[in-house]
Length: 87
Image 1 (cartoon, rainbow, N blue to C red):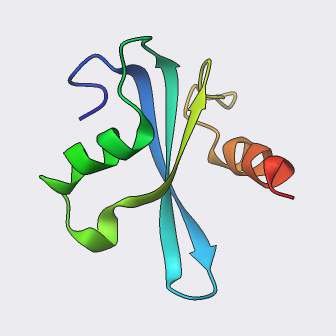
Image 2 (image 1 turned 90 degrees about the vertical axis):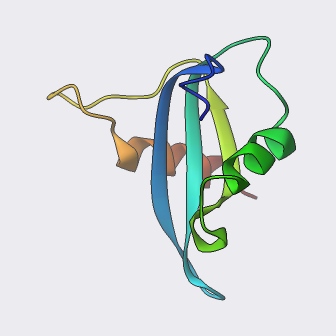
């Protein structure tokens, strides 16, 4: 949704372990447009096309998403950055 509406140039969803639910999803957005809606509105738009269990529990906005040597999104680096920001 974010990419198709032009809100972000790059989009990656990463599953993370969760003690309560087993796993949850984090939505990483890269190259976010200044006209992109706030996270709550973005998640509301996702509700129209995703099952509740598939909705992201967190949205992280980055200038650009990190990539590995093969040019694929580097999920480990994204998650490491997420953990570094968590107190």
